[in-house]
Length: 118
Ligand code: SF4
Ligand code: SF4
Image (tube, rainbow, N blue to C red; front, side, top):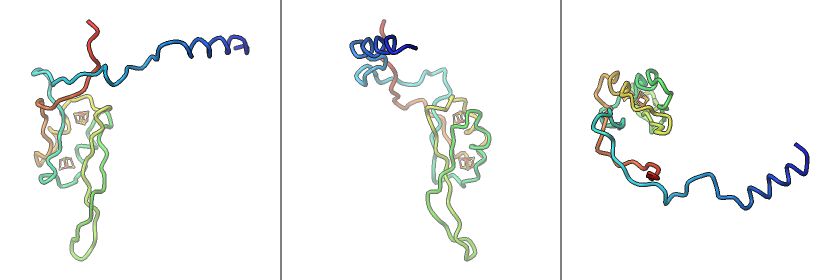
């Protein structure tokens, strides 16, 4: 790219509209009744076994240390899953593999989505 072409591109982008959508262009929506819903942790049921994180196909679960517990005189970390909803494909596998029913797939949550242009 020559300097002149580059200068043209810079000037063009200075006076063109941004390609991203402003926040005002999003609206509230709900999950479709045909979807599996959104994984939500029930912390008091979770044992921190990591089975959900190991089975997530999109690597959307990270085990985070949220505290410490004393077991037989030893201090051990308490781990809980954290969901990355931008990576999640809402397949429900984590809820299926959890042996303690500590993950609930919920459809009643409000989500933000781009406003429809139609
Ligand atoms: S949510 Fe279930 S599978 Fe995941 S760490 Fe907790 S107990 Fe284990
Ligand atoms: S719903 Fe599927 S993609 Fe989302 S966190 Fe659970 S296993 Fe991973």
